[in-house]
Length: 435
Ligand code: XLS
Ligand code: NI
Ligand code: NI
Picture 1 (cartoon, rainbow, N blue to C red):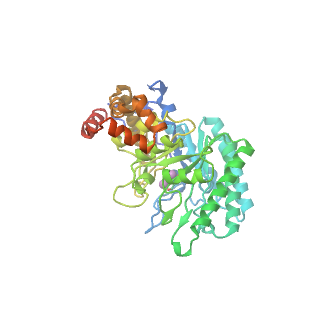
Picture 2 (cartoon, rainbow, N blue to C red):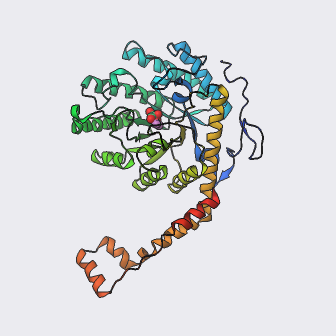
Picture 3 (cartoon, rainbow, N blue to C red):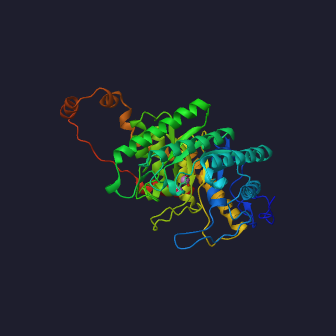
């Protein structure tokens, strides 16, 4: 037991009119939206690394936070941290959490000691999960913080690091499996390069493909039924990261024949860094059949780095959940708060209220998205725009036509296509009625 969150009550839904800061205004887990409870739509998860392991440092200064579980260098502190984490989960009532190995146990003197420590904390989590009902959305390996990974993990020029990576993923996949995790995530933190001058890009890509194949094989071997997810990001910490965006990851999966085995975990901030909108990445993943889960946060539009702020922008959330709902909603995936406090936000209250605000923003976005879908105007106008393709002749153009046939159609039918309005502003006005 810690007393870190003691002054903070459990957060309940009180509705939009409440004056209580420590309440949900829009997130009511039991409210039914499009036939499903909101909790089951959104499937919120707290990210262990930002909330409990990150100490508030930045490139110009170290730790700003003071937490009872610092310094994070012993198993005793790791257990205290876990106690605090589950005390926060009880306040928020979100169904899931996510973690890396390095978030939850101190590094050992050897691989075997690190792995044993992960086992030990996995047991500790198991008991707490059993007692509280909190579940694991996903586990993952931190293959980027320790200096051994400075030149990459699976893509490292040193085969010993490749082996170390495989062993580390094995331990994390085992832990995730034991805790009934619903997914396993691979974010290629340092799988990229700083300069092409010292990089054999073709070789590194092959190494990454081989590692992924081994992960897929091991997943099946141990009977892990969760979903494997790659999390695209274009850069930071590397200058260029191989899993740049959804399209790049899809090309990579196709290349190694793994597009039926692995899906994507799409992060709002990473989409922005890649020069896309979040909804673009979601829509593309759905179109390619690889949509899995989301890391929700908000990226600063000027900074150029991954700011991982808590989401507050409801119109943006609405467009994102519109794509999620159109994709059929989450199956094993969910909404993971890959978001951290600003380093001046020192207090336990800040940590709780950041999540409360984020959960409310997502809930409002979800409800707006559902209302837009139920209204149906957007989808009807989209369908109208493509209605010309509904005829058999038009379909034949896609299935049987040749260029000569096109030529024939145009000449014989005297075709003279007339442009029609795309109605963008009218559609934007329509969206604004819901958000
Ligand atoms: C970093 C990533 C990371 C992954 C998990 O930018 O978002 O937090 O989600 O390794
Ligand atoms: Ni992430
Ligand atoms: Ni990120």
